[in-house]
Image (cartoon, rainbow, N blue to C red; front, side):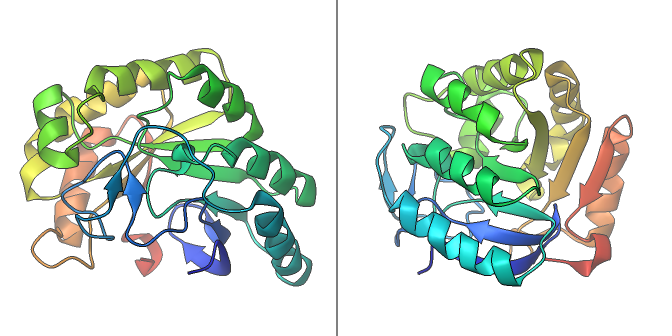
Length: 236
């Protein structure tokens, strides 16, 4: 496995340098989402750890950025990125290498932690996953560690927006099980105050994925936002 890879074609941000601050197999996370592309095994933790050497990450990123043009740096992990206690250090160092946006995709479970909040200023874009509108739906879809509450995720996202730490956006992954919550999820996005929403479905996991028509139909609940879907430009 490599901590730095690409450029890849990201349906969220375009040509991206990918960074994985966890780089573990099986995964290390604090949720066990029903649609996880990494499977349902792995280690479930809530304490932050140092998984990879940030200096090595920066050097590998420097080599690629010196040779390739990218639209963004996209940080997403084999697990929750903010479980990496050196993530903020990585982001600061990556920012020094390039003028393109530094983006991170997070499940939002750690946004209320002071150390995480302080690190958010090192990112240009934070994309928070939001697959439910209440605690019941959250447990159904994301199967969190027992210490994690849905309301805390929403409160953390609202705080990030209110303090203008970075550009906060939401990504919703739809499967059959949470389609009925689309309207309520859109209302939660309004409560947070985001402008951009990404709509996804696990297209490579048989039995979990929705069709392009399904996603287009669901997008009507998100008309008040800028919307991008996983089917735009046929990028996966």
